[in-house]
Structure formats: C-alpha cells, structure tokens
Length: 337
Ligand code: NDP
Image 1: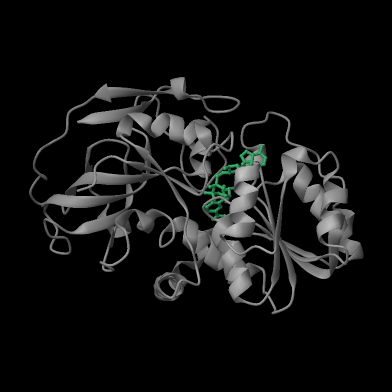
Image 2: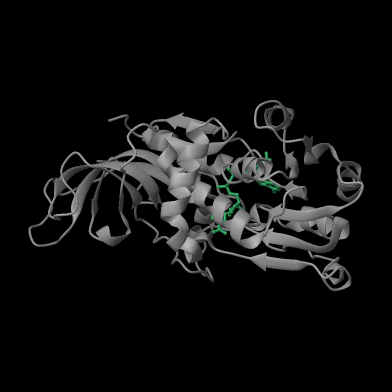
C-alpha cells in the first residue's frame, strides 16, 4: 500500500519535501463488527485548506495532520470490502480518505455513495463535490445576487472561482475574474464565459485595475485570496455591496499577513462582508447536486480539471496550488478503476 506521509509541521509555503512516499501496510479485510469499509482510492482532491492542517497550532474546525501519518483529504474511492450494510463491494463513494492506494474507513457517516453514473467519477471532488458546493453556497447564500449586478471573482480559474463566475453568468450578472497567468485569463474570457478577466501579476496598482474593469463599482466580491486584492476591492465596492470571504489563499503561508487598510469602506458604503464555511450549508447539498448536474448536462457550465497522474505526483500537485501551477480543479489520479 503506497502512501504519502506528512513528515512534520511546517512554516511558510509547503514544499514537496514536506511529504514522502512510503510503502505501508493495510488490513486486507475490514474487521468484523467495525461497520467500516475498505476502499481503493481512485481520485484525490488537492485543496488549499490542507495547508492549514500542516501547522502545529491551527485554530480551526479540523485538527492538524499528525507527523508521520498518512495525509488525509477528500477523494473518490471504490469499495473493495465492506462490513456496513449501506455500502456494497463495487460501490463508488466520495468522502474523507487517505493519500494512499487503499484506506480502511471506519467513519462511514461522512461517506457519500455516488449515484450519478453519467458524470466522470473525478468530478465528485470538484464540480459535484466540496469545490462546487462552496461556489454554490457562497454565491447563492452569501452574495445574495441580483440579475444585472457587477461581480468580481479572484482566483477565478481555480476549482471554486471558475464555478462562481459561471453561476453568476447564469444569474444574469456581469462577471470579471482575476488570475495569475495569460493562459488562465484566456480561459476565463474565451471558454468560461467571463465578461472580462485580468492577470493580477501584471498590475502594479490593483485599485486602478479594478477601476478599469468596474468604472461604476463592484456589487459583489467573491474573495478567494484575501490580502492586497481584498484591500483594493474594498475601495471599489458600491454602496450596499456584499463581500463573500471564501478563503485567503495568499495569506496561508505568510508569517505576517497583509494589513487591510480600507476596512472603513464597510461603514461608509454600508457593505456586508461575510466569511462562510461550506459545511454550514450541507442541508443544501442534494439540491446543489441536482442543479449543478442539470447545468452541466445542459452545457450551461463548463468544468476545468487539472489531473496529475499517479499517487507519487500528489505532493507536487498540492504544492502547485500555492504557486498557481494548477489550471482548474487540481485532482490526482491514483487509479482509474
Ligand atoms: P484553486 O483551485 O483556486 O487553487 C488555488 C489558486 O490560488 C492557485 O491556482 C492560484 O491561482 C491562486 N493563488 C495561489 N497563491 C496565491 C497568492 N499568493 N495570491 C493570489 N492568488 C494565489 O483553489 P480552490 O478553488 O480549491 O480554493 C479557492 C479558495 O476557496 C481558497 O482560498 C480556499 O481556501 C477556499 N475554500 C473555502 C471553502 C469554504 O468553505 N469557505 C471551501 C473550499 C475552498 P492564480 O494563478 O490565479 O494565482
């Protein structure tokens, strides 16, 4: 059982050498009476929040990884042995698993059986998984969008951002995205239907860049990055605008997070800025799967995935999230069946 092991707590940006590939043992049968399942892992999800679990003191809803243990994350897997009447051998499931070939999962409460057969399996960690659900809950529940409004999305070509922008287009909004390369900007404008997009790395003044794309201001900012982009967006919000704080990927690895200077805009423009966790809205998950599946089948939504091949490529895939290497949702294929 090949495994990716977390070596020890880190500071700064994650490096491939913070993880190592090892050969480990796994029980080949589920202990009787355990209620668990043994799964073969097919697709692993790389997510920025996992950087937080590499810190010793992580003030979070989820505990740190233990040094020397297998990295844990969301994935799509196939049941190969079961001691649980809800899961049969051959079922495909999505949920928390290990970065390894086979995982014994005892907490089966969190597993979802994959029912939809006509959508690629790997999409269940992205389009129809946590990333898609974050976009869905954040956009409809936090942004309170109205047709015709002006929306700005950062990290717009990533797993969450690409879907927020497309949901906003379906909703009749004007959408601008920022991303870190020409390739990503072209993707946003030419394939994903964003009205405009720009490469934030080429802008010396983010405030001026936003003024260029939103001459009369922003109604909704869907923030994936925090830091200086958030500060510039605050200056450009319209009265009664909304800022959905989804994440702050620019701040994960820095020891002195950027100071935000323009918070007073919240008062003057009566802006609502709200952080959220997708897990709070899980009651909406079934309607999300139905609606997203329909959008996808009707080709109203295009989904971009960045697939790395082989478990051994998982550390570099994960590290790439913090340098912008991924184009679309970063997934690692461990096995196709
Ligand atoms: P992405 O697929 O967007 O990958 C991360 C991207 O972030 C990179 O590709 C890169 O794109 C961008 N990035 C990396 N470093 C920086 C930086 N220093 N400054 C600006 N941009 C940077 O990841 P996800 O879509 O999975 O996640 C997006 C955000 O959503 C994250 O902040 C994540 O933590 C958050 N999230 C929140 C959830 C919640 O419940 N609130 C749940 C899931 C995710 P580029 O080349 O454009 O710079």
